[in-house]
Length: 165
Image (tube, rainbow, N blue to C red; front, top):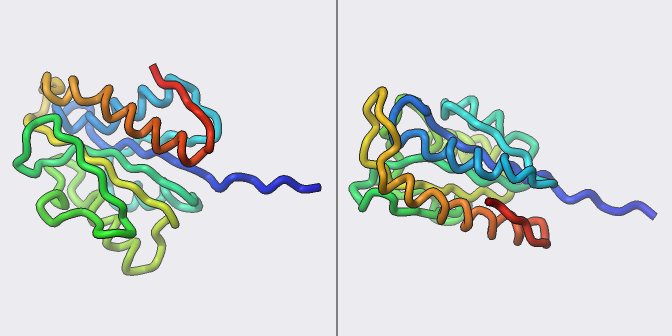
């Protein structure tokens, strides 16, 4: 008897570690990577549209994590279902150096019907995106909570508990 294989789940962290809070997505996925989760593929991306689309290619489920500048409180965490309302316009303009990024990858994926069947976008509100700066205290403090939320998403996807330090 053949046991069906669970569709592929990918988590993509987007950012630039040399631009302050823009590193948030990378820092989140590095914590997940350190946990060596089985059944989950972890990717780091600079966030170009093509790179993000390539990373989510052939996946049944994807979680993307990126910093945003939405004029909210630094460290605020936003979650969007890409097949639902998508990303609000105020969050669709990346404050980072990746130019065309996650929002544009999402728009092109919709246009060409190339989105993964399950696609969740997490944004973490940044306050400092200057070159050479470190992650702000508010964003650094929010990262563990975002890791926990993504851990719960992964748990639901895999149908079992996962532990992230």
